[in-house]
Image (cartoon, rainbow, N blue to C red; front, top):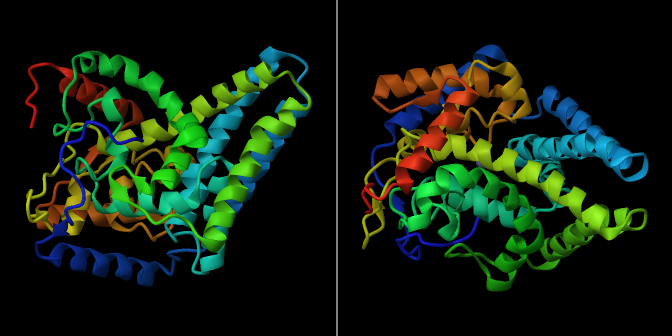
Length: 369
Ligand SMILES: [Zn+2]
């Protein structure tokens, strides 16, 4: 997502202050859980199986779509399914790999992270955009790119309201469809050209990182445009690309928005001059994040544990397969330390809360900070 109307300028270096007793106790309890159960933090067999299923489905659906579809009306559901599986690879395989949560072996994490190149992104840029900026400065306006959609919408109370935001609760859902297309065709390229993500400077890739970036883009463009255009008219290829990529954009964006841009999530403002945040890092992570549908095992499996975002933000290097079990310990520890633990019981409740949050921030009488 792009920089836009956000207020504070990022070059100020942010510092979390506050006691780390909550984090220390939480770590002790989580480590005790793994010792007691003998479960693995990473290299879980379920992840390897899931990865095989997702990658086989991806290439199977691609071959079916490009080479074996007799009519357009059969091709449409296959393109939608391909979009869903692509989002599934992003949420399950790439996300764990990029966070070093997949395996204890760094090369396996790197290979899994590179599935992002396969689906049109850049694992090099993701490390900064998501792993560093979003995960450190969660929900802090001007620092967390995930809650910044430029002039198109107002997702935090500290962004400027524009008159057309009064309809954002209606139109944003459609705009989410363009998020993946923007990454593919412009977002990553602009971050490399300008050497920054939002207002945060990022080092341009060099050596193998640069080779991987270019090779990834060439592979994706060949897979999505060049090969299909050898067999179909260009406009048909473009239409099906927009359909599948919109599904990817909507699924990924909605899942991430339900974790942060909803009622109950905290939106902290750092001290302007010193960049000081009067909270411990772990408490900030828990209170700026919201879980949803924790009781739904199917949702947890398909969404790569991203409905357990509190657990993910506190333990990004633990494989998401473990999150349902960890959430009970995290919730109890939050309760013991008086830390807010926000959740929506169902996916629908999360969607409704995001809708209300957008409507609230779009109103003219909502306070502008
Ligand atoms: Zn993450």
